[in-house]
Image (cartoon, rainbow, N blue to C red; front, side, top):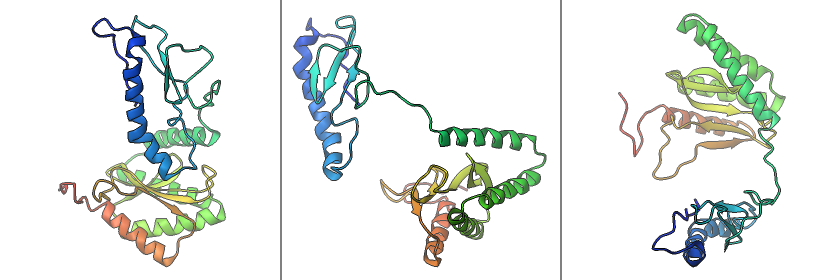
Length: 241
């Protein structure tokens, strides 16, 4: 997060405070941005150049100031916008993202129309199986195995569609899901876990796993992950009773 210039203090105007702001930006780069770029120099992003990132000021400088390549400028050309490329436009959601949102809206309407809890659960699983059957062959083969493993490892989880993806929920809250490679035109499928999954392992742990095939070894790993996810106990979490 870029430093907020805030109001002028002690009668100092914006120009007098520029060196101080430059120092704040330099510390931001040193602490957050450069370590990431050093670890992965091939990545290209917005943060390192801080191109066209503006910090609004008060009446002392209504136009705000502009950070470009770590340098503070007092002017802010109107043609420059936030982002790594001047003049770039936000294209909005992709077609795949819009389709996922439409799927979720349909899921919510369908769930609202159904009767008893048992009826909803039975129909939800049929919806999941139908979605899996419609997948491309490679995705379908993986989704079928993931479904079988999850159902065996954690019968307490109930299948349901979630943004058009097979998902498995506890008390109505999604714990894990299968995202096909085809859905977002990715090079691999994904087994993902939500923050409801008790996979905590210190200050950092994975919550998503790339899948290119589901071998017997992978099935064992998935089963162990799912069992842990619903255990409701972790090094940093009090068990839920």
